[in-house]
Amino acid sequence: MLARVDKLLRLLSWLLAAVLVVMLLAGPKLIAKDKASQSQSASPYQTTTAAPDPKALFKSNCGSCHTLAAAGTSGQVGPKLDHLGFDVATIEKIMQSGPGVMPSFTSTLSPAELKAVAKFVAGS
Image (cartoon, rainbow, N blue to C red; front, side, top):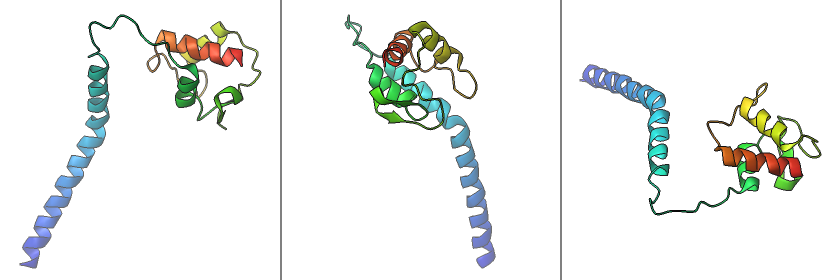
C-alpha cells in the first residue's frame, strides 16, 4: 500500500515539476502577448493622447540604477545624473543604444517617451 502511495507521489511531483518548467518558459511570453493586446484595444474614437510623465517614466525605468534629485531617486548601479551636462540628443542616443550593462529602452519606451525622459534628465 505504501509503495503505491510512494509511486503516486513520485509521479505527481514529476508532473508538477514539468508544469512549473512549462510555466517558467512560456509564461512570460504569454503575459507579454496579453499586455500587448490590451494596449492595442484603445478606443478608435480617441483623438488625443496624454503627454508622457517624464518623472514617472524615469522613476520606473531608470531610478533603480541612477540617482537624480529631480526624480527623487537614489540608484547606486549607474552614474549619478545630476548636473550631467549632456544635451537631449546625446541622452536619447544613450537610452537607445544601452551602453555597457545599461539596457536599450527602444523596445520598452515609445519615441515620445524616450524624448520626454531625455529632456527631463537634460533639464536637471
